[in-house]
Image 1: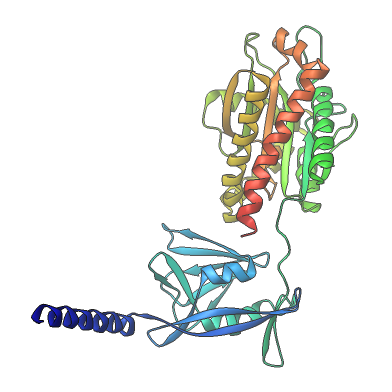
Image 2: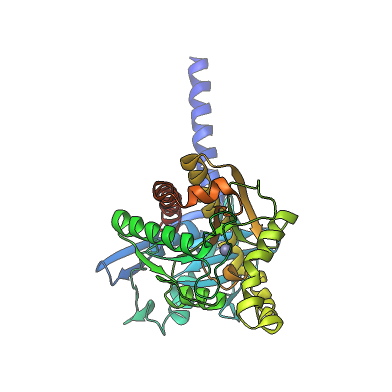
Length: 386
Ligand SMILES: [Zn+2]
């Protein structure tokens, strides 16, 4: 009997503790914000939580509704919030954020609770309609918040760039005098066909015949067409006739002497065919792009894309794996999208020159590059659309 009483008392104590913890917890579930989705013509509800008497919304729930993404920069104590095609930068634990180079004050701070970030509800109810009213992505109509369904951010347009062309032949085969520009174009056309037929994507070639196009025109073309990826196709050459194998690059400052050699080789087109040192200076002035925050986001994706392509290429062709490298290619600099440059093999190596002339081998190169892009796309789309 005594034992039973103790057990009952313990139960009562446990319940009281649970209740106390519930009421003392800084987060308590409270109201919700209702938004009208003009695309689906349905109301969506965004749960809010009260923290120290102020209504807050989690980025987790914002991301579900707006298909937005956040990225924390621990060093800078910032949160980058990509929403409706724009970027908002929050300073953690402050009430300030930056949007299109202007600072705004939410009055209450952005907070980190456990593993997640929370923004004051006023950001959703007042700041979002104020910032996005011009484009009508978020607006207040008759006191009711409404938003336009965010567009599908999957990869849909890819620019394939066959290196060199016209007066610029690129590398020249040692034995059979094969021209790099011809191999690049043939493989690029094959990749285009695969991506169009098997994934239904819009593929744009920077050139579809033997003509000269400057490096900056190539990336401008990709930017103007709002391409999601930029893939430049090249064939290698080296003083060393035994050098062989495949390598893939993405933009960054070249880290090894070999990478610098390939960088110099691919960049020399500017001095040779685009107007000498003056033209080189123009490209060097573009270097500031490297420091751009958005560009550094693309660097990460570019690295992943380069790795996927390189792995598939090496596995499918059994060529020597020369790895994924960083180099400062002019052609990749101005691209505001993940961008890579592939070196298919060495025309300076007699065996590889012969291989690169073989139609079946070129099919395999195209197929494995296609598979690499496909894998990257599946992964990237999933991240961008969730
Ligand atoms: Zn080249």
